[in-house]
Amino acid sequence: MKPAVVFDLDGTLVNSLPDIIASFKYVLRKAGLAPPSENDMADLIGLPLAEMFRRAAPGASASSLSEAYRRHYRAHMTDNSRTYPGVPEALGELRERGLYLIVASTKRSHTARSLASAVGLLPLLDHIQGTDFIPAKPAPDVIYAALNHIGGKGICMVGDTTHDVLAGKAAGLCTYAVGWGAHPPETLRSSRPDFIGPDLKYLLKVLSVMPV
Image (cartoon, rainbow, N blue to C red; front, side, top):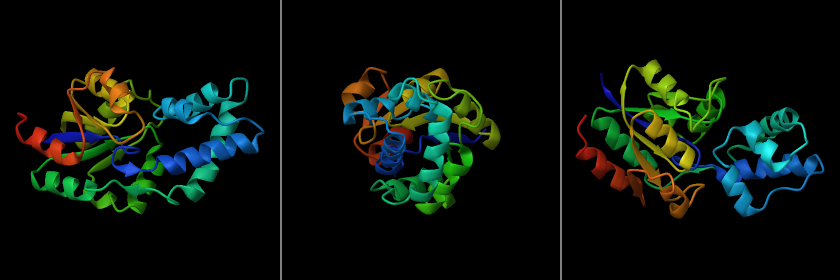
């Protein structure tokens, strides 16, 4: 099977965290609830949306808050979201090497595709798989679903949170943690990724010597 690199989307390929956090805090304030601190918010990123609200607002209706978030986020998800520097170029080079490039996101598939399209990444990706009624990372299910759809052999999981690293490990993939997303390097090290990279140029070097 053709080798595939699996990427997280938010905080890995796209600097979408400001818009995610803004929508999350807006919904809590609108409901009369206190938003989490910056440190607490960082711990929530990467979890399923309902779980984020359950932790941030115990006793409130996580499902109602989640639906309110989705409405607000759909209208504002590209207010400030942009690809990280060097991402389109790195993806282009990986495609030239003949690799499948797929996304395994905690977002729902249609939302993840909309974001990727809005920031210009859609033509560079072979498949975008969201967490559509399947277990979220750190479970490996979304990775398996993405690989099954494309018919590829996963070789590496690239993400910005410990959830990504643990999901990649559970799926039997090499794990590459990026140092610019939701979880800082010291937090990422707790999940013991195979690599922590300062940019995607280092990922290109890693993949160039990896047997496929």
